[in-house]
Every structure is written in structure tokens, then in C-alpha cells.
Image (cartoon, rainbow, N blue to C red; front, side):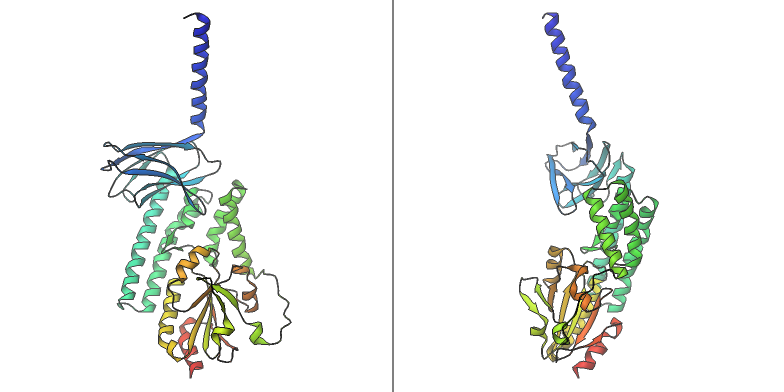
Length: 385
């Protein structure tokens, strides 16, 4: 081989090597070992704001060793390793190498993580959420079996959520810009957020993270969506909703509502409520108090439905798919207002917090606004006489 050819081969090899090194600088790596998982498939997925995207997968061999490399995100983002239905959540904000060690049975709970303090915090938050969810499911069974009262159930559920939030706030306020702070905000039990942006106390936690991400990651989808959610909640608290010009003098027409049910059917309040005492209930199924609120309504509905009582429940949830799933098994009329918290309907009814309910008499007139749900059954029974 002549010197010229040798030199060209050397230059070519060096160029390829440099390109490879440069490419690796733009990637993150997740590697590790999953014991007792031979033949099983491990998936790497990107957890977006509205969907989960499959990025890569590997069929594990006897030693359970795996390596994933993927392009580094421009701003911090969330990923997960999935083995069957078990999930390990991971946050990426650099070209770091994260190592995960686990086994098949304890994959999602007993794993070890190296190389990322944020991923360690996310594991801690995940375990807090799993504990809360386990306790919540236990309470649901107790209430369903009539072992505890509605009051006991409500108090216990509130204690579960407050326990989680007390711990989660330590992660949020210690570093609102962190991925663990963002992750803490969006944990759920039974498909409901533990932190509620429309709760005045919880809104402060949303504000801390939203403002931090808005300033440092301006323009990113996560930062924009979180900040917009926070601003909408602030506007709701301040009553900053545009006023409606009311010229209709007939209160029956003024307070009529015509919205679509989860099955796609139009449900007009005046069509279904005539001749009945109707509870008009403004709510959102994403609220952490939604389950106990609906349990309270169910007890009353089952007791009085045969006497001419109906519930017309208006959801202000922004997520239509979630609302359809949550409302499909409820026995009363469930509709959704697509204008959510900027609804012209809640402006007419002067709703400033949710849930809020009104009683409509058999003549179609609004006769009571429910100030305390402890007195709800007494108020309804009064008009059914």
C-alpha cells in the first residue's frame, strides 16, 4: 500500500471516528441490567404531554443487559422503560448516562438508579404516588362494602392527598425548575391529579413550577402548556372572564343549557327537566374531590330518582377523552361544556368555584344555590314535598 493511499485511509477513518464521537455528544444513554427477564422485551418510550411514543426496544438475553441511546432533547423531557405493564419513569436534561438495575418482579418499585439525582427523586415520588393509589383503592372498597360512611371516606381521601402533597411540595419548592418538580405536579390517583390547579393552595405550587419553566424553557411545549394552565387558573380565581350582555328577560330561557352527552346526544336542560326537581351540578372530574362528590350525588340520586328527581351534571374538564371515560358509567345526565372554565354558561350562573350546584324546580325556575353540600339532601327533599 502506497503512502498516499494509506494517508487517505487514515483520514477517512479519523473522519468517521470524529463523526461518531460528535454524534454521541448529542445523545443520552440508558443502560443497565434486568434480572430474570430472559426473552422479555424492554421498551424505551418518550412520554409526551398528550401521548406516549415508542422509541426503541430490545429483547433481553440471559444476562439481562441492555443499552439504549437516543437523541438528546433540546429541553428537559420525560421517558420511561416499560417491561410488560411495569414502568420506570426517567427524566433527561443532558447527554448523561443513566444506569438502571432491577428484576422482573420488582421492576417498577425496587429498581436502583445511578447517574441522575433527578431520576432518583422521580423514583421517590413514584413510590409516594403508588402508596397513595394503594390506600385510595382500599378506601373505595371499604366504602363500596359499606364498611365506612361517606364522611369517613371523604376525610380519609383528603388525608391521602394531603400526605402526598406535603412530601411532594418539598421537591417542588426546593427547585421549581427541576424535572422532579414538574413530575410531582402531574401525579394522579384513579386518573385524577393530586395537585389541582383550580385549588388556591395547589395553584401556588403550579405557579412556582410554571414561572420557572416559562422563564428558562420559553417556547417549549411543556413550558407553554403548564404556564397557560396556571394563567387560566389565576383568571378563574380573579373572575377575569368576559361579561355577557343579557337581554333575555325570561329566566327559564336565560338559564337553559344545551350541551352534548358522552354518547354524542344533545341534552337540553329544559327538555329533560320539566316536571322534575333537577340538580344542576357544575364540576370537573379531574378534581381530586370528584369521586367523593359523585358518591354523595349517587346516594341522593338513588334515594330520590323514583320521586321525580334528576341530575344534570356539566363537566368543565378540558380533556374530552378523560371526561367520556369518567362519565360513561354515571346513572344521571352528564354533559360537557367545551368552553371549559371560560364557559358562557358558568358566567350566566355566576359560578366562581367548582363544584357548584343549583336546584331547578318543576316549573323550570332556579330556586336555590347550594352553599354547603352537607345540606344538599335536605334542600332537595324540601322541594320534592
